Every structure is written in C-alpha cells, then in structure tokens.
Length: 352
Image (cartoon, rainbow, N blue to C red; front, side, top):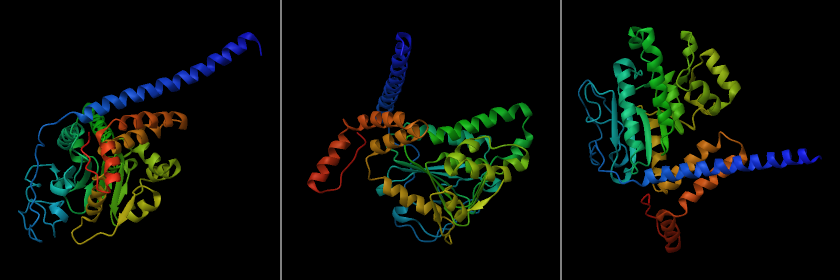
C-alpha cells in the first residue's frame, strides 16, 4: 500500500470513529436536556377529575352523554358523566389514587364518528403539549368515548368545505400532531374498541402499543378516495408489519378485524369484546397499571433508546443505549431500587 493510500485508509477509519463518537455525544447531550426537562417541577395537575371509587354499577346520563355498564377498578372508568359534556370533542382525564400518573385521552365526536376535525386537532395538540411537560405522567391511553368507533379518519364533510389551499396546511397540522403524539416521552397505548380507519389508524400507529377488541375494524383506506395516507401511515405501517404486507393493505384499502390485526402484528393484543364495548380500554388500563410501579425515568430512557436505535445501524444503536443508560446511573430512583431490593420491599420511585 502506498503512503497516500495508507493515509486515506487511516483517514477513513478516523472519520467513521469520529462520526460514531459525535453521534454518541449528540445523543448524550439530548438525553441530558431531556432528563433536565423531565425533572423540572411542575405545578398542580390541571383538569383532574375526581372519580368516585364506590359509584353504582349502572349510570344513566343525559342523551348527549354515554351510558356505561360498570366502573373499572379504582373508579377508572372510561366513561363518566363529567367527561362527555356537550360540545367537547376531547376528554382529558388524569386518574388518581392507585392509578395516579395515568392520563386518558377520550375522543368524543359521536355525530361525526370521531372524525378528525380542525377543533379536534387543536384540542389534542394542547393536551399532548401539556402531558409532554408533566413529569408526573407515567402513561397516556388514547381511546374513544363513542361506542363502536375509535376514529373514522378525516372529517370529510369539513374537508369538502375547505378551499383547496386550506387542505395542505390542515393535513400538515394533523401530521404534526400525530408526530408529537409519537414523540411523547412516556408510554402511549391506543385502545381500539371500534373502527379505526385512515387517520384514526394513523393516530393509533403513532402510539407505542395498540390493543384492539376482536371485532374492531382497522385499515388505511385512503386509496379509495384517490389519495394516500398522509399522516404517517405509509411510514409507520411498514415498520409495524413489514413492507410487503403494508403495501398490500394500503394498495387494496383493506380493512381487517382485531384478530387479523393481531396475526399481522398490527396490534399487540386482541381481546374479546364485552357488553359495555370497552374491552380494549380495560386491557390498556391493566397494561398501564403494569407500567406504573416501574422507574419512570428508566421507562422514558428505554423508550428513547428504542425509538432512536431502531432507525440506525447496530453499532450506533448501542452507542445510543449507552448514552441513555448513563442518564439513569445518577438518579435517586436507581439507588432506591437497590435499597428496596436489599430490604426486600417494594421500591417507591419518584422520578428523580
């Protein structure tokens, strides 16, 4: 090898090494900023709904509100008379008691089959922004307060009234919302108890975990309208079920039920629907309760490492993992975990 070739070879190796080091340093810096934000003390939770743990098993509410059969454990029912006020497209509930740290986003546009409107996008954007900054939130559940429907996609009646120049900006805003939902630092669970079509499925795809009832219907059906999924569906569906299957479903505008979705890997769990129509929500709540006792900083760092690492090569992914791991070492929660293990008791993590 000539002197010049040798220098180029060494320079190439140094360039690769430097790139990996810079990547690791960038991720480490990002983790530090993220962790500092996570530790920032927040004010008291706003809009907390106090639920009665000893409520009766059957609640009748006004005609514009939902009727549900029974409260879930600890009063964490999906439907509540205080949730579905007239004119509200979105209910945001911060659960309390043993379920403190779980936040439920309930879509509530019964007449429009929970279709995505300008108002719903604005409300959800505000809700996402609030929980993103709240270090007390452990898990977010996205569900529907309308029986038999999760979200029918874009509000086509509203869309038809838009000028052509308005469509692009609205789709961009909806896409940005779904991206922000996907970027929330805490675990997110989509509880699909009814039809999730088009943009509705795209919202669910942005969540970390999807749970569906066996009779739920899911599909990206935009090609029926001579358009394509425009809020992340062409990117997230292939990552969830593989490229070939995603192409097949999108090209055919095919709709699958919960059982088929489970076999495809589109959802993690398919559950038997109950008489109340909230089986997926109840399973999501159980899953959130499994997350709740764990170290919140550790869970957030694990999510960050997975989400960033899955998009890069293994060597860079391992560097990302190392950077994220470094952020949990100095935490009080890690020391509490070791102490609790030594004392044979349940750890009390505070997110510090």
